[in-house]
Length: 432
Ligand code: SPV
Ligand code: MG
Image 1 (cartoon, rainbow, N blue to C red):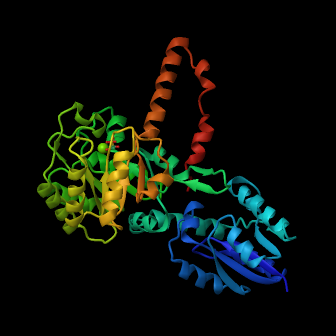
Image 2 (image 1 turned 180 degrees about the horizontal axis):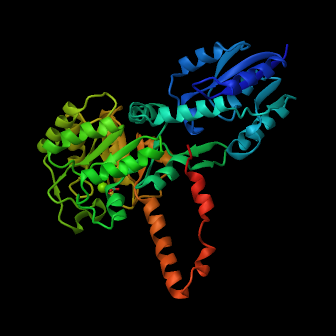
Image 3 (image 1 turned 90 degrees about the vertical axis):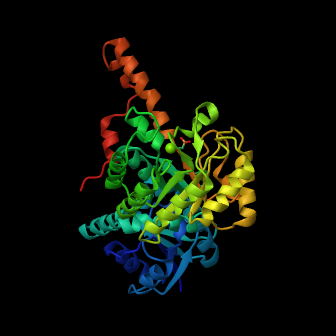
């Protein structure tokens, strides 16, 4: 008897899936692959149920003979193991981002005479509704909040990109690329940077933009996205205020706040020792972390301690002493910052920290040492990489050039060829 294989990456079964199975039955024994968590995330479909729950769900569908785990979005593992006579899929994978996957599967099947069966994709109201519901579920605070902890467990390194508005949030949410290996890739979460949130308002990064305004930026981003959010909480402010902010952020569905061990008038770390900056004492900052942890109500929310010792040239020993002290005070992660062009001091810190602590997540912001790859960071035990300001730095020069171009030409024609038509920009924006 022939084997027919299909891969599902969904938490909810709708007409489209049932249609695939009904077609599949005609070709032979039906094996359904359940895409693993880590591969589902890369495919832009974050799971809201466990792999065990999904497998049980697929097994219940009428006509399914067997359910297996598929741990490679390009099907290499399952095709090698099962050697199906047919792979069946909705014909929507003939174009767009999934076409590369189809081409790859076709190549694998050609090696032994297997075939692809494309079934007309089901465009029904039910399918649309289920897709929409899944998306909305992911944007609900209880799902969004815990997603960062889940990602740390599920992926080799969590890739976080700066967002400072609804539109930049949408770019982080929706940008998907196809890598050299044909695999898709995307960002995992968003960083609401104090530097970019301040700059977008034309203000300096000195904790001048108050929490109410920061919450508004977060809300704008949350309205149109589902990915987890890490807030740059500056120094966390007064401990008496920080505890209230922890509650608010947690309730909104923010996944983590990172606070830095500075005190007094905070200046941006990229200034280093060029400006006067005061580091908080280990004792005070530990008490702030402990108070924040005591205030939070869920287990999901993370308070991450950011150590400024390398920025302020206080040395590696000081950085490590602080890291262990802040962890012991309850910090759920450590962010180590550096403005050196060489990643050596970051790697040294991480290696030494990992000698004694294998688990506490480490976060880095490679703005100055931007030559490092995610793979290298991950090899040094780093769990989260934050690209902290690139979207804003990309937009600013182009906006400036455009303004200058119009002033020079006394009309907008000359700049038009370098502008994106609005039709393309609004494609990003969802209509209900
Ligand atoms: C920010 O993005 O606001 C940060 C990171 O705090 S840095 O600007 O590098 O200090
Ligand atoms: Mg900042």
